[in-house]
Length: 380
Ligand code: SF4
Ligand code: SF4
Image (tube, rainbow, N blue to C red; front, side, top):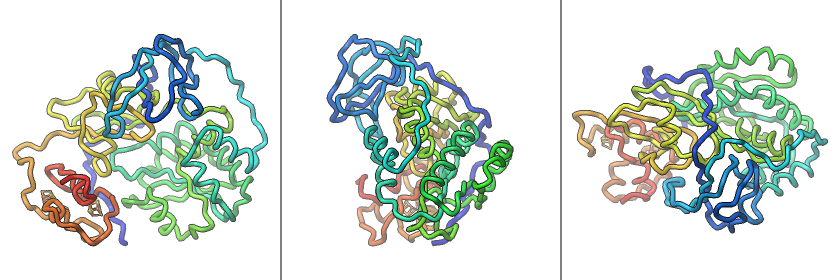
């Protein structure tokens, strides 16, 4: 499949400096099927375990257990445990960073202890590795999380890559960055230069290179002998192996039309409305694309919670003088890489081709119809 370059709006800009918003009034932690380990009005410290037998969800702030509320988690209403911030960032035990010798067994047992399903699925299946590939690529056109994570954590990232490459005895370790972001990488070059075994590969700004299969094919690496991780995986590993803790904060890009885009470092489980209203001046008649204009969906930010799965929010202006329904411009079927006609799916005709869920049809549609949801059959 031929990968394409997206036409991006040059007016959508994102500040190169990281913004911090680490003092939300409340955090909202989805309960799902977990059993609570804490009670209402109980005091919790930052880093405390909140659910029985689950060390993957920790309190990101210190404060009082306020109660339970229903919030939007990944476009579903879920019950959430609410913690009211006391802004003291109090910890029960001050953890000293200890550097233990990393072995494959210790890595796997740490991932199991902290219930890290995604990382376990990668590391449990490793056999022989020739290459270690670290992706610093965001496919979403107005999401800068990866490049900001690299810029702000360069030493931690390089140390972790070095450790993994020694552990698995790899022949090469490569950080992959889009050429259009190379100016940010230049800021890190002095540090990168002190790690002679790690090289940087610049790739064109082609859509879908964030996906492992497309990237490895593009770089001509044998996927059966390559360990592929993205920068978030690397930093999650570093937090677990060095700090013995899951990350309690995350990066979130908020950008769009008529706003000065920012990458924010926020507490996990903050409320999106609080984050946006305290940091960004939003134009009236804005539409919010949760997780971006390509792979996201249009939704409200009022009760949206910033979980691990929410990475960016694009604020777009409602198109004036265009009706909210399809006017048969044909752009969606023209751009689809696998030649699906999304309009037919809106007419309830199933496509016999496999949708890549790439979001190009959504991105190109002038009236913002969620076409991939029709193609997937999620919308009737
Ligand atoms: S999301 Fe599916 S239907 Fe839409 S452009 Fe991509 S492959 Fe085609
Ligand atoms: S891009 Fe949107 S408006 Fe154009 S044909 Fe497809 S659904 Fe209709």
